[in-house]
Length: 500
Image 1 (cartoon, rainbow, N blue to C red):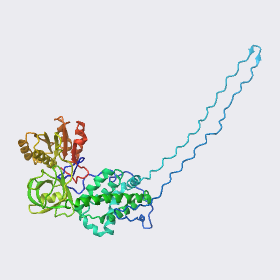
Image 2: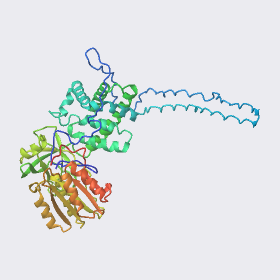
Image 3: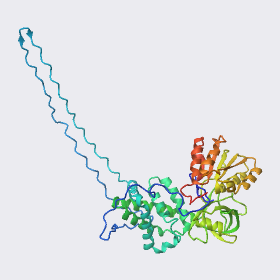
Image 4: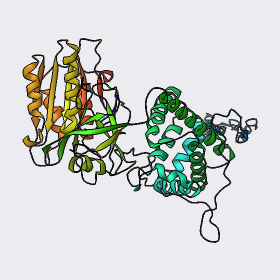
């Protein structure tokens, strides 16, 4: 089951595609606005700007920055002008034969012109580092693919030794490192979130063979790509802001990797000991790591096969920790899924794969008595099964309600296992949910089925499956009164090409 788990996530962790998982519609999405490029040279190319070398990571040397001048205020209008009023004189009354003549009616007064209001001075332009980073991101958003391609071309041209750290085909993860760096840079003001995110990223990069000396090279090429494709927002202040942000980013990642190196290897070798086909495109793969592998039920890891070096995909553990140390995964082969197709159709007992470190927080809180409401769609049933086993191992009788969804009856490939668990544990209830209508989707049927039962306000919820099911499921559960902090699911952003 393909999946990374955080307290906000999603996806049928059943496979991998070449699309690299769900993509934010922001920086790397399409924008209707057209990008206006800067001046070109005689050959039609945008001249690159001088690149400030990235200083050694960890240096505390301050870079001088040009102070911004506040825009001049518009002059205020003169409010002391004399205002003239016109007095109407009434002619003297004439005395006629019949007495005094009536005075003529007074002439109407002219409306006075109101004094002009002062023009407000424009607000000072935000020149903080965070604002400068955001302006660069807004400028490159419409051409992000071009920037990404230039970044990697520059990296491999100037540092060809780094090419070996990447897979042979770059279509699946060509922009992942670049996108992660930009994501982190735009969250520079949120120290806690940034540190958590980057620490996880730094630990994960160990399995690619990333070393501290690689970071300055990446930083130089990042600055080179941004300065070339963001001419309108680029300048000494902006470059200094990006150098500072990247220095912070790389140092957090390096420190996290160094700390992790003291307690765990960069990867584990694992021999395939069992390969069971459940459907024509779903296999249960069981492996034996070459050394103890600590993890928790509900977590996930990254797998690499010998057929596609340096291509990693996330899969959830399909069982709680076992006394024999074996690990099982449910894998569904998806179109163009290099890792998933290799694991389903090529892997056999005796083959050796590699495992990354365990990750994810979709785990059981054993300090409470709350029941568990579990929604598993497709191969998303794998971590749900692990959670059930975890509750059983702790020996506490707490209600566990499982809704197992599939599009058709034969897609309930693990229903027999779940029903056997139900027979062994009276606190467990398993309800299959099938949507075999035309165009049926687990994103619609499974959450709706949960509404037919309940109430669930005293339960902790766990969701695993296709992204659409996760999103709709979260909305449904929140609407039924379950607070968001008690809803756990796989990370939508990290899921790779999930299909069901």
